[in-house]
Length: 444
Image 1 (spheres, one colour):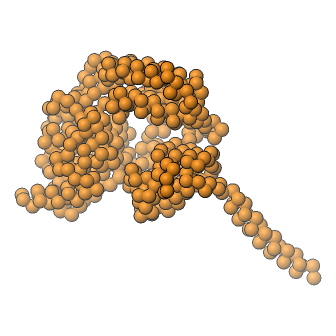
Image 2 (cartoon, helix red, strand yellow):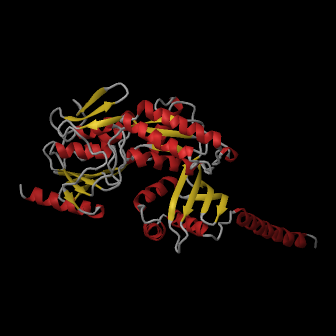
Image 3 (cartoon, one colour):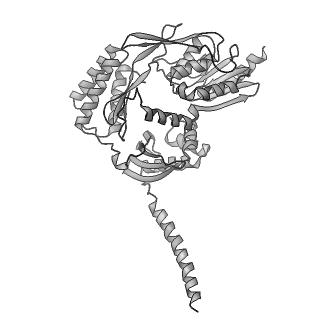
């Protein structure tokens, strides 16, 4: 007689436990505020986590038209989406939040600013991975007067020492010092806002898109960014493995036309095998399309490696002149690469306004050598290699220290970009290239 009540009680308790756990989980989920910033963030998080291209496209069309869902889809595949851990700070048009990747233990701190409109438009957004071992309490966006002075002094010193045009460095110093004297920076207490403001003020004088002041809410490594230590190198290698060194697609299109899409020129010491594998996969194509529409640049040594597959004999690609020691380094195709070369095969390079830096060099080199047809939009216009300099625990500056000199044109694409041979919207570049390749091969 006593067993039956205990059985019922046991079932009741298990049901209670399930209910309590469900309620606890629900209560543990941070509440996204019902503000313009909060609603925009919620729409992004839902679209991103869905993994649905159409939903992401719809989000960007509505809230952030300047960005591409293509990059976001790759990022989503890499992270598996995000779990919201905490709303760190909430204002009507501003949100700070903490998230965790679903496929790893990596956490990231993010900020979102939106316009006062209906629907709100994203004016700025950042999402930074938090280095392992960093406590959220160590993430600080606020800065004081001493920090502002230290960062300005350090940035100007590095520009005067290394910036590719010394007279422009002095003009940048004069402009920022004048603003500093007028107190224009005195009310800025947010690190991101200060870095963005300094970047804008320096670029207003230099018009150099490579020149940037960067802020990190977590403490920067003590080492010089231009000479990373073993730990940083290991972290870079791990990151490259995770994103396949930026190589996104390699396939054979109809008509035996090779297609290669990669979004960065990574260090060949780490990523050379990936590049070689991609080019060897395309060894027997009759024409090749290289898609750089979302490529932001990178290492000139990787540019030389990939370029070598397009030439049969040593070819002078580009020169880099360094201001600090007044030296010029030449870049040529390599004497050897594994596998067959595609010399003599028609080549097409796809560009957009997002194509930048090293991707522009690759396009500019091949255009001047009459080795490829450039198709798409005029590129971003950044021809000055950059090196990073640590300013303090949270700020660094990227200083353009050299300039490209093409051996044929004797100039470069700084400020103007690379003009395509065939101008079409970036979205139409691939179909245009396929058509041209088909016509070219059909005429043989």
